[in-house]
Length: 96
Image (cartoon, rainbow, N blue to C red; front, top):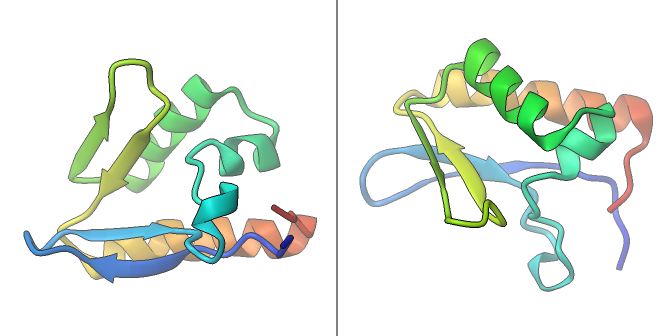
């Protein structure tokens, strides 16, 4: 099922804030590289931009980088990123 890309937020048991599109995880809605493709950026440039502009408190990835994630201690800081990505997705009508 296709839908407009939209990140939602949650807090984990360690009090870190996360966001991602979780509407259709079985069909890949949460792939970390969707926003990079939406913005026409390489994955590496996108990660660099997120780290420099949105300053997550934690960045993690697995060995082959099929997963890259970030999280924040502050909900306000996380929302700056989430709201910006969602606004870009609406503006570009980015469907996943």
